Image 1 (cartoon, rainbow, N blue to C red):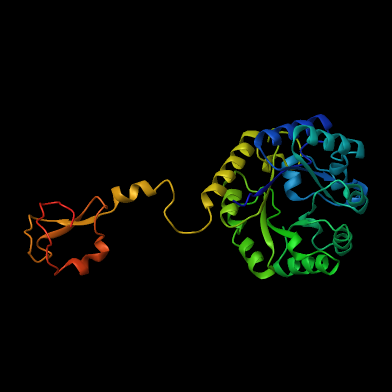
Image 2 (image 1 turned 45 degrees about the horizontal axis):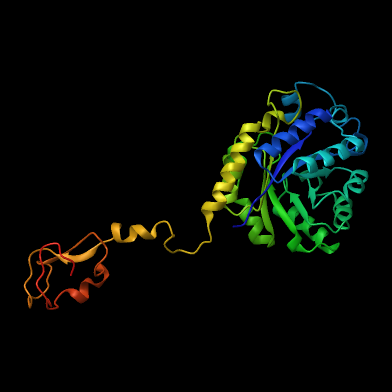
Length: 331
């Protein structure tokens, strides 16, 4: 069974509080995810002082302020990171974070199993080059991108020493929450076909149906935002799962993984005992005397399936009865 890598995206849903961040880790552990992911950035390096918020950020926070003002309140210090890394180890879940500036890339480079490129950096050439030079496996989100932009980003990575087999590309829509009509989940399969890479899905829809569906389509990585409470103040809470929803998503994905199986069409171990019960055999329709010719007037097909298979019907028709048969007796 190929296990899907499930990343619970805490993001900035800690609201700048290390205690809240720890509670998010606890929730992720309880849900059974593989990684809990935060965001690492310095607001002054990430965004210009006069950059406006995205419409969903204004709508979700209800506060009109610049991106800089909003993000400055959501930074985690380096000390906070060390605390969270240690806490994740203590709790038995993997730590992950996405860097949004060069200093943050340098800070994280020896703290991660793989590197997660966010959608907003897919056209950031110097960022992609710097990440590639870390020589770590890469998971790359592709929200807002067309196929050519994804190809171009992959080309930057591979031309700077990254093996394509070490890249997983996540289909994504960067609207919070994503309307169902805009999910376009089949684009994930297009990425797989056109780029020849492992695929996954980073989800911003409401609910858990779409990431589950993505697993059935071959997603190797699922990333999903979560929060302790959707009503909390902050830009991403409303489009995030609450703890019980996250737990339900993980459980459903693990169930789907088991159900997908190995693709070989054959009777399963559990159903083999039912073959003789549910299938049919050729039986006598009436009493038949030895020497009678077997015809459609004196034989038929009934359960159980322990006798001659009805697939041999044409061979049996016209043959001579080798013995006497009672009605319903197997031929």
